[in-house]
Length: 289
Figure (cartoon, rainbow, N blue to C red):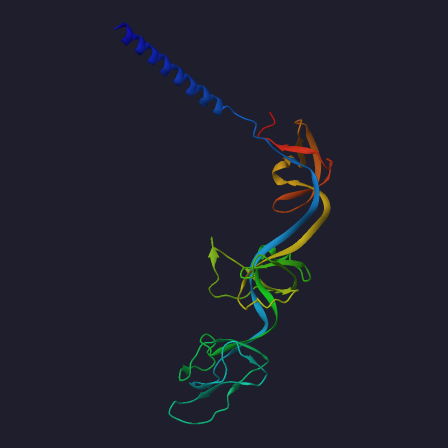
């Protein structure tokens, strides 16, 4: 029996030690640690930009619709075909049972046939722009057409530099510039309303500096218009700037408070005009108490 009780006591000691070690490591791992993030004041270019979506459009395009009700008698072109101004495109007859030789509709300019929506024998309506026959594009150059939110309209001016990324053309960034922006929003009978307030948008066009054969009409694009820049200036992330009344300050590595004068800001960084030096280490703290 003595041996049995010894085993029980030994087992109890082992369990007690194991439990103690478990709570010791649990308590140790739960102790608060210094999670203050630090960063270094450094010089960099600070760029402020406005981002919005758009689409690639060709230099000019034309929708070919029927000038009168009738039936397609003959289509002279195919998708992708290069055409010259005045080349025949499509012939329309008033009836499939007659053999009148009406003059074909002709190309208004030189370009490429980019879309054909109808087949020979199909009925077409007069001036039906929603169900047109074909489309031709002058693809000698491209631009971006975009919608600018009302809140950003006053920040966009003609001539501003733009950075363009086109979803279907790898990750390359193309340079461009704003060439036009509407003075009035487009009238829409079905304007979307959020919270009882209509969304107002202005149409803008952005020229693309470099022609690329990979561009196609309708490709989606993201445009960053550069509205302001500060070159080779001291910068720091927003999260390291604190405000006290109408003054701004940073917290140095030794927890001292340093008031600063700030300048240009973008979504992630702030320009510091005075108060600190390049190389100063600042930190982000939860409380200064």
